[in-house]
Length: 475
Image (cartoon, rainbow, N blue to C red; front, side, top):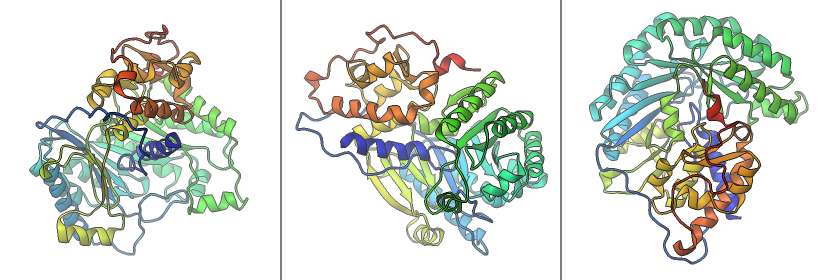
């Protein structure tokens, strides 16, 4: 049962670690293991200079898309001055609380943050720079919808400090866009991406969705070809997930719309991987592809288990509140509803609704779950930062589920660390329950029975065999 609980929590983290998610979410923790000596504690994070990424949530949209269950709100009017003041104050409060020395990246997600004025974006960035070091080279991303973009507005965002755009294209087919409830047309999307590439060359990302009701493999392949003719150097692909309470889910449940079968969905994903890698893209994360080094630094901070601070309604964070004298990492969630969030920020400086200290095991579960989403996987160095006394080799290099998965060609454990093969990355969700179960079992053992902590290649001879791995296909 503990493994099931752990997988559900980890699955939430995986689902939320995408642009706009504000970082991984968190569910109930695992139950206590058998009586044993205390589990080893993680290496304390350095007192200074500490760094973190910053996520800023703009919660408003002009229209809710048919598939959307994000923390987004459609309201008659937005008091932007009030929202701006609260974003600035909460950013300052949480940065002071975290005592981070430097911000490595900033991501404005939503909602539709391109509906905010450049003045609001500039004010938040100025607050960040006033409370911590914000290097001129730091990646500052803004999510944008084609329907809320024009050249003058983009120029304003660039002047405010934005240096990267993530555009929600979703499809280049008008019928598919109508099905998704998007405001823009395919022509709008093309115009927006071309304008963005002119102002943010090499730093314009597009989102695409597949697995839409009634979508065929040929239609998806044609959409990919159209996207390749339009895109810059970063593409994010997301399989449509029918979320409870959305209009699209209701139509599918009611039998109005058919979903593609699972084997077709798998075929669509493999088609995309093959096409994009052939076009020079590195498949560096389950849903993300980049060429010419245009990886999303901000989202890598989630997948690499770095600290990040969430600002705005419903934003998530993972950081150590050193300003309170704490030396433990916390999972934090801000109050989701904008009006209630603003009231809390105005009264106490921040709108943190939930804060939970993450146990060493919970941190390792996130390191594993999120790290395996990348082609690099979980390195020995990163694992050792959170688990200095229990190495990757000691957990996953011994007889158990992980070894079976290595023998079946889904995983690799070698001198670099633990990662999925090219085939394994496509079925990561099915691998995680077994890996989490093995981690939990090994963690519950007294140290005398855990085995060695040597960091080396897999003793079964799989170490160094990188044939078929994702990293072997890097562009």
